[in-house]
Length: 323
Image (cartoon, rainbow, N blue to C red; front, side, top):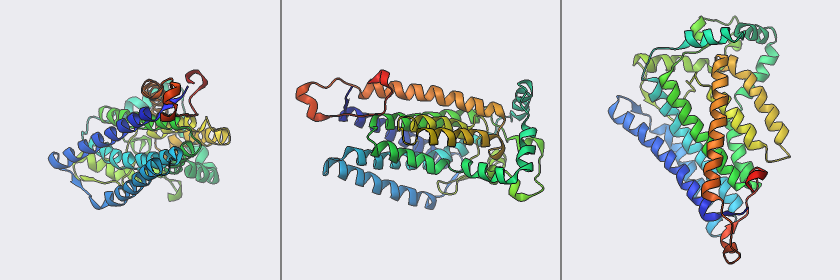
């Protein structure tokens, strides 16, 4: 199967429209819901995105290098969406609906999961906890690395699947976090760490989350934003999406799978997540991957007539059933 360049451009248009729509909601929240937009926090990611898009267009139009152009543009898309999705999650948290921690805690217990046992293991093995925390914090680096990897390796259709799955998943997760908010296991159980180094990586988000709920915190920012979502776990969802994104590249397939399996294992403690959060995140990721793959197949896949072959580009990376 060949993939029309025009089809890939349509998909990029959809991705940028989703970024713009998310940004519009954030701007409306800032204008009408009492939030303050920290404009300076958007300058660096905004300027970087503009440079990446300009470079992408140059390499596509002037140099005829679609792989490099796609890698640069998708990197810009990752950065741009992350910059507007983080403040959108703040707007969702400010809805301040009743907390659902007790229900999630009960679900974990009913399913037989021992969160405190996992915490005790990490506290007995602090070096293990240090390693797991580093893997948990690798998410941002991995998100950018995958965009570059898929672009440079020519898997341009799968790159769009990855981008759309990321955006779909984040938007669904943010919406559900507004409907079923939770403060997380550490806060819900009133846990403390004897050694501050054993606090979860997410502990810096607690004052922000609580402030959004009681109205004392109303700043929307890109750089410096905290990850405040408990249910569903966006970290768990993105770990699944990253595994899928790495898979078509044999050289890094198993490295990506292993790294993100460890990220899933680190998520309950360092993300202060209930196990049900993790399972919900995994389920959302699978659904969004399927939806993204179907959209890419519908809009970008066309048999190329011989006379129009010059207008098409072959793209690797889709599963064999779609080639």
